[in-house]
Structures are given as structure tokens and as C-alpha cells.
Length: 274
Image (cartoon, rainbow, N blue to C red; front, side):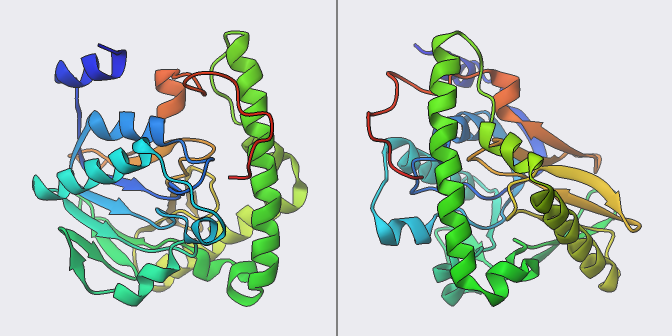
């Protein structure tokens, strides 16, 4: 029995009031479905928010990629819904095809454009993917797809880099995320994005905002409101969780569990973009 199964069977489950996940990008080779499945198997919650880019429709339209762990991730979410977890799916720009189904409930999963989450301590938070506040995605989709290609290239480099780290016994570390932080323009864009989301929450007289989209996990006060980004499951493998007393926490699953970046051999000779 592997370590994941043994932890699951031993009942070492984390229990939260609410879990927020975004930017899984299921359907891409960059998706860390192994980390995600491990997290879902060990987590229970009363509410689960899927905050966009869960399935990557952009990538699946170009080439089909879907493995057993992608299936397992979907199965575990649906099992949570069957077992009483209130699951809300807020589509993002990569799974915008599901925006045609807003207001429907499918297999216990409710689709919504956005939501307002009432925390245990009485605070109220806007829950939104966030692409509406990204001017490149909103006004220049061609540039967004060009940026998507560059990002895919960084993820390919990330896979090779971590293959070498694994061979030398080092844990997973996101090269692509580090590169993004080194680019001054990217840092400025992240700051503008965070400010725009915080201003929207304040305009609605809410205490804060939970979002995804930019693959940058963060929890900080911006202009008097609490900005929280739950990160992604391509680079950082992070989730935002709410405890039963209303405290929020960013969980870095890759760092906590030190799972190998690759299960098996090194990547193929000619890797495909994520």
C-alpha cells in the first residue's frame, strides 16, 4: 500500500469549514493532478468553491490530454457533493464554455458567475475567478492566447527542471513561478490585479475577495479589505481554506507533503506544451 492510501485509510483527514480551489487546468500536462488527488482524499469540508479554470477548454480544443488522475480528481469532487458538501463552480476564462450553464446544478455542483461567501465570523467575501479584471483577457484575447503559449513554454521548462531535481533527490520547486516573479512587468500586473479586485470588494461593501486566475497565491490586506488568491495546481499546488472559527489559511500542498514531481521516469524526449 502506498503512502497516500495508508494516510487515507488511517483516517488522517483534514476537516475545514470551506475550501477554495482554482486553476486546476485539468486536461493539460501541466496539471498536478497527483497532488490534487492526494489533497482531495485527505480533505473534508462543508463548502467547496471551484473558482475557475478547473477544466482547460483552451488546451483541450487544441489537443486532447486526460489521464486516470484527472478522472479521479473529478470523481472525488462529485463524491464530496454526494456526501453533503455544498459545491459551487464559478467558471473562469479557460472553462468559459460552462458560463452558458450558469444557474444550473449538475450532479450536486451549482454553477454560478460569482458568489458571496459568509464566513463563520460574520465577514463576507466576494468569490470570483478574476479574469474580468484582467485587461488582456477582457479586451485582447489574441494577446491572452499568445501569453498562454509563453506560459506553456515556461511549464515545459519547469517539468524538465524538476525532473533533474528529482534525480538528485530534491523536492518539487516551481521554476516557472520563480521566473514570473523576476519579471518586473508581471509583478506590476499582479499588483494592479490585486488592487482592482480589492476595490471591487470594497465597492460592494464586502470585507474581502477570494479569486484565482493569476496563479499567485496570496493573502494580504489591500486598501482596507482582505485580498485572498487561492493559487493554482499547475505551479504552486495551493488551496485557500477556512477553519470553523473563521480563520483563513493558504495550504501549500506540495511543500507540506514533498511528493515527487514525477511519478516514474523522466519526461519523454519531445515534451508537449501543457
